[in-house]
Image (cartoon, rainbow, N blue to C red; front, side):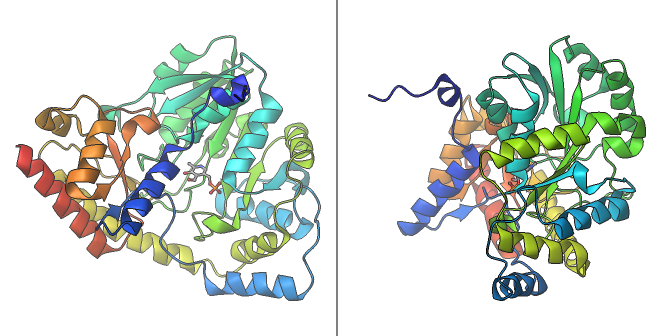
Length: 395
Ligand code: PLP
């Protein structure tokens, strides 16, 4: 009998990874399963990035680097913020880590004490609540449904803030909903935050580039520069450059906080992989046209998928602003099938229709499921056909 820590017992394994694994197992067992659970682009890393990584090996960049990332990469991250976001950061305000997830974990470890409250808008990315619990802090979830495009309002935020609130997560465009906050919406949120100086804002911009709104990408410090010294931007190369396996993320924020996060990193993982850092450097400083091509394809798939899903009885779906996820409300379908939970619905879809999806409960939004459209149009068409046939059976 192993008496595990209370911290670890408070959390569950990542449910999205679990779905991908289940689908892979069924596939390996010979079942014709379509897995739409994955959270990574189905593109390969652009060649010039791979070439830079090979060159890094040949040049002998195979040793420890500075804990917080090689200076060239930190400089490239600063340039990226200037180029894309008109935000000025010094290299001392940047920390490079082993993936966006790692950046978030460093932040929570450096910023939160036991009992501190963290406001998490739902639907949320699966890891926010569990990472919060892992450091002993308390997730406070605000729910935003389909009628409000899955985005919290300033009023909801105001009502959720207490003297114990130490942080707010924002994720736009959002995994799992694909929705992005407009400048106006962020300004209203900023007005609330100004009244509560103890709250740090963690803006997870991982999907910044996978966006097709008419208006360009905005985050909180772009619309509220006075809050920049209370904001940490969390991002990385995983999604924009199809580099999920390389494990490079970065954080930008106030120097003392970044220094504290660096200290955490220095006593846990040390530097992210040296070769991956050189690859990320090539990604950020090289030809950016790959992103546009990928986003064009994602948008085309999105339009087709949303159209197909909208025709399925029992589904309600809103077009998204970006990312590669669709997040329909499936309460109608649950009622038709006669199941109480979206988890059960997804199990039935897997066993009866051979389609693997992630239940909305994993994202704090029961009554939904998430489909990833990081799959070919043919596969998506087939998935829609199967889900439609499944729904038709019960209507
Ligand atoms: N933030 C969001 C919203 C994500 O969806 C993901 C990946 O799924 C991450 C952060 C973490 O990305 P990485 O693979 O770089 O750790």
